[in-house]
Length: 287
Image 1 (cartoon, rainbow, N blue to C red):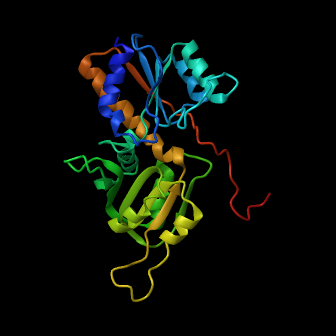
Image 2 (image 1 turned 120 degrees about the horizontal axis):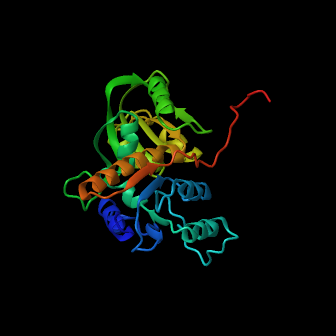
């Protein structure tokens, strides 16, 4: 059985913490480096439901995409929900490790997993990492469909293949428009509209799209403006759903490392839906 320090070294090799954004909070939140690890649970969110699932599973380590304390804290008191998570984990000897923006830009990263879940062929990063000479790392991915599809049919594929959430997906664009190229970015992506427009793709799939950026991104170009065209169609999925495929990809990566080192390690992916929204009504739906 590997020690926690050995497993964490393997995870840091996959997603080096120095590649995280400066504002991010990645790495190990709690855990004894000398403790043995037999089971690892991957999840998107470090919430109490995931901590409880780890206890039932007998996991020694939880790896999440989202940080527990992104903006820091002055207390881990158990009368706060985050403090309760920390107390639960430490009390039962469960470590917590976070790979966030360092996993977003990795090769493969969060957006590769999203593209894979949708059967898209990755062409290049949407925003390349300037420190990567291979040109494979970076934020988001520019992808191609194996064969053209209408926006309506592609949106239906997204709805089928991503985990079900109360939000479902929202679409902006002509349902009959033909889609050949797609930009994807797991998680919040409305800060990438400039890069998406520059990529010239037919549709942008991401999460957490706000009204004004989305409205501006889909407006047609003024008549007579040479070199400009209307923005891409948009597909807005639930934040959790766009990042959950990374858990399966990351678990497979650790499984491969475990086999290579002949570790007695079992890797699991949580299917607990930690998306915060519980239900919705369509506009005009009867009571």
